[in-house]
Length: 223
Image 1: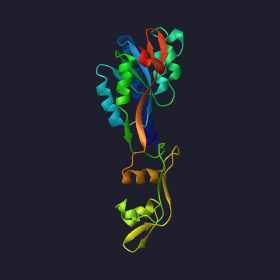
Image 2: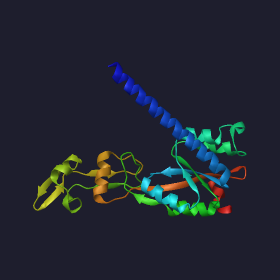
Image 3: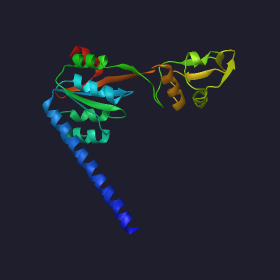
Image 4: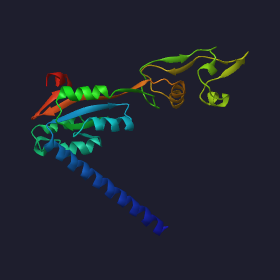
């Protein structure tokens, strides 16, 4: 038992060391970018998808997209004026809450905004996603015309059917999704089977730092 415990403790120590090393690398990367690029953009990520973020990174050219723990990013930028490596750069730290990321680039705000807007894409919702539409399968509809799935699968998804002539009718209304209400696992599955994309992948500029000042996204078209 003692030996097994030592092995587990050793693994935990190694894992902690690796996390610490990754955090240090991230801090160094952020600070290096702060000295190499004119603009720092704070962006909000909505319904993020790794494949789409990868494509977005390619569009940035020489720029850098950095997404990590907000606590580590704040430490890299500095939380207080005496900690910052560039004038007023610590003001960015106050915005790093929730799904936020940093973009370091020499592209002017209007160009960066266009890249972000062009990267938006409708996607299938996942469990917990907030759909932008409402959709209901009504009682009496021939469900097989919409979902070519075995009855056992339909029932597992919460869709009760009955045979009416040659049709498989839905016994009662089934709310597939409601605007603003988080999707359940079953709802997300049904929407995907139906081929209905209900959420939007977006990268939204919240603010940007330039030459010692922090600007709101409203200033993007004037720079």
